[in-house]
Image (cartoon, rainbow, N blue to C red; front, side, top):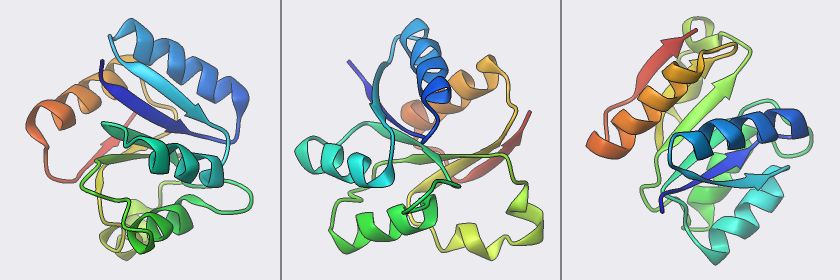
Length: 132
């Protein structure tokens, strides 16, 4: 089964994303922090990562940097989930994040997330930006 690592500090978001992923045929692996996500990846690489950018402690940017430093990136596609539409104001932030294939601006629809994930896993698509 295709495993999707869900990295978000909010438990209700992790639960909702988990339910969406399960209904779409994916196996969600929840992580409440970037540090917990790194531990999970060290044990077993997921097929993709859903990553909240703004988390306490290690944020999403630091998480991706740490993946690269530890040699754990390994081509795992990352879908960034963010409430901040910083793609237009700071596009250089995302060009510096290896592995980021898509950016979903919250709130986004269930079908948007599933279609994005299906597309990336089926075709290993180039980076895209998706809003609501």
